Image (cartoon, rainbow, N blue to C red; front, side, top):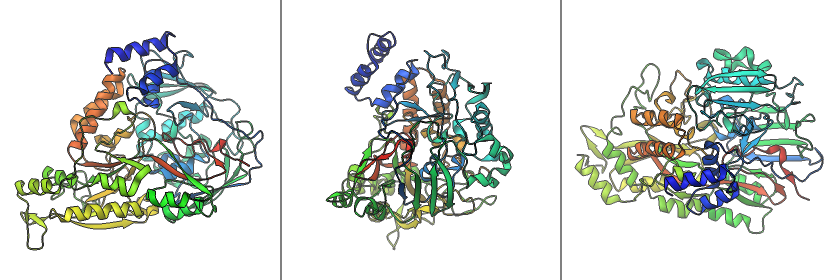
Length: 597
């Protein structure tokens, strides 16, 4: 859509000549998703639509137990330390943000009384301040009141480098968080900020209580007992937790939303694999819900035939991808492998990275493995549509890969493996134990063999691979291998936080306990520059162009190799009614889940 036409339509919504719904429909006709349309309006000063999820039960409790199965088990319950969606979801049982994202990209208030807008005085015209009004009468599970002091504390907690919070990137843009009164806070950004709905929102916005964690801010952050025994404001209170195994909660009788939650108890069982989790919900009915159905679609379809459950899907920005390590994972510098100052002996060669990218048969991976679960892609950012680059294309071409390696001087030795200057193209390719991932590894390994590249396939138990254990060498954030594959989650319908995985100040290191979001360690000054410019660009069209530039820098360098743009997929019993969103944690509205008779 032409820029002038887009601005004209936004103006029509602002002055009442077009409805918000009409704008969304019009944008959908030219390829914009509903979340993107909503963000365009929000950035132009039109308030988010505020709709509460539908809820049938007329009283809290009475629903019996709710049994969830996460084949990647929850390992901790502090949202500021969550390195993956399993721990974000485990935390979401007990903790809440000021607001969350529904499936259409609308902001829904939780601990906030309303969503800030120009109309209610919550958003400044210059994009530098946001005022949140907090919900009154909210209590922590120990009976203490939730106030503005807790919000201010979470900002202080997250930005303290010694805390080493995974959420820090969402709070460093703030100059200050000011308490206006017990139920009002003002966020002051360091510069005009078009995407203000990041701090205190969604998976990075869950708020922990000041009176419980105040003694554990900074260097003592990992010593807090509440890291494993949460005290939140959410619909369920803590009962028991065995990290890597099982998490239990009970209904919060003082929950601040009337008639919720429906279920009396909640249990999240961890471990196993995605196939057994799907079977336990869809076929046997032993569990009500299973997260992240990374299972071949043909298997899921067979299970659904005559089963007790079904597969549910929702669009998202999640991505299954490969990182090629341009640092050296086999040499230790200052007690740290894959040190940002080191260089990989062969993967620093752009020709090698380009060849490997050509050896990924994305179409076959989509067709024979993911099916409904995703679409082959060459882009890191795939949704909303406005942020998807038109410049990146993928190709599977073994002959072309061989030609590139020949021209770069990589010759095949007697063992069939290419080498140059005594260095061989032999790599350890790491991922978590999961059938689709092992099949994807095998497809790529077979193609690489035909180009003289030898891959040693390594599979790590999911609970270890996605653990935040700083002492474990096999966690995905350490990248102690040549290449690795996993899914990265886009937690909101704006790619700003998603793309901070590409900036230099987020490089994962020993110093930040490997909590930095740039796991590749690859940096490019042009990407840093584009990101900083996008953070303060109030024009939504220009801002999208800056994010596309970042996407293209990393994908063109073949450091990031996108494979599948994933649909958020879960297994659900036929009687359970969850509220599912591709832009937030699976359990973002756990309070409103219920079972139909």
